[in-house]
Length: 465
Image (cartoon, rainbow, N blue to C red; front, side, top):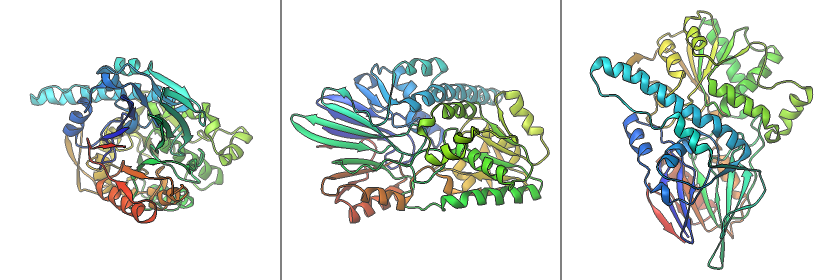
């Protein structure tokens, strides 16, 4: 058995790992790398292996940094099945189409500017037809139902508690009479988040591949988040400003809307309009409504038992059409605009930032992790000048950063999860999906507390068992 790391190795995005068993290749995730535009395009357009040589793929969840390069994988020759949960299949169906559409539209927008400057045109990574083709390879399965993907490999999906449909991938391998269990966390969620269930506690595994996004950091308490949102909105409205929220369409937007709904019900939110300006967020919210089996008891008790929609209330408006999105630029009253993408790398959020970051009355509210070199990270760092669509603009708006909304487990939550495992069985741990300092800090803690053999693999690094 062999394990090789191609993406999210000493970096956060672009999750992509290869497991080889009895000569058969299993790809775990195929995500988009997000960072410097030129570097991202090079990494995403040139896969570091032959896609035609891969026999099967397993997708942990639908976030674009885990799923976003699947169209490229199929475009370049992969012909096998892609296994995931039912909810992930439904989310990927709309997210990958949306990813292709956004890439095409952003390329068109940039090319208009390039043409005026006499620069060569850019090409999207893939197009809508590529996304549609890859979707025919998806196979949806339920949680806690073991299934065979190869003669020597059985897989079980367990709820990772990260986003709707996210899975811990447990691979039971019988190679040449030797049985081993490999567990891939994908992105590990947190206990007590609204809407979805808590992560399933795995106790038995031989090899663990774990994320480390917040491996050296700690979240604010989840119960404080609602009060912080209330305070930010009130202060911005007092300045007659707008609240602009870059938010991931899957998970983060629904959690934020859930809290806003509670604040409205409690009478604790100023009377301002709230817009979710993202066709993808609108479609994803419909998928959430279809998969109530993933909801936790609190959500079922609070909303579903009362036949109340957790994702809709009288002050909330979902924006689909581009004309309605453009119209938000001329709104002069205080409002909240929630828009994608979460790291500010594409989509309608770029237009809202361009139109609002130069006004000190406004607030940019970030509610998720911003990877290194993304526009979102530059905003979080409060850099005085940022670049949007190639134009440099002054960042004068207030910036509020709320890590408590994160759907990733922090250092304490990760370590508590590992302590729930059988240390006598766990032999090797691979720490991925984290910036170098974060991954190494977590690896050192695991090595001290849990198991001795802990690795922080580099891109392309290979391990044989």
